[in-house]
Image (cartoon, rainbow, N blue to C red):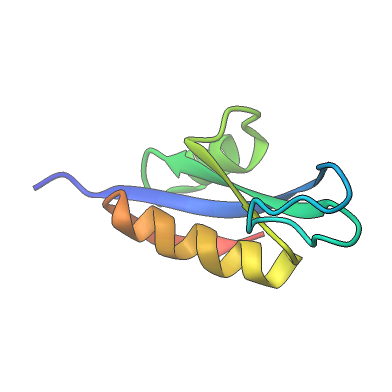
Length: 88
């Protein structure tokens, strides 16, 4: 069985309209935190460096706070079959 590895990284904020009811942002401000899921080919230094420096996430997860986005991203990467290596 081939193992898939991933890290999560806070990538910034996104803005929705004030009063947005998407459930992913803070409705009063329309601001949501974004965390990317980045695949790593392995756990060696080079694979980890490539994942850390990547600008191409497997998926981006949005939530109303940085911590909520991190937790949601970790849950999502596990759903996708990745082993969680850490958050940076």
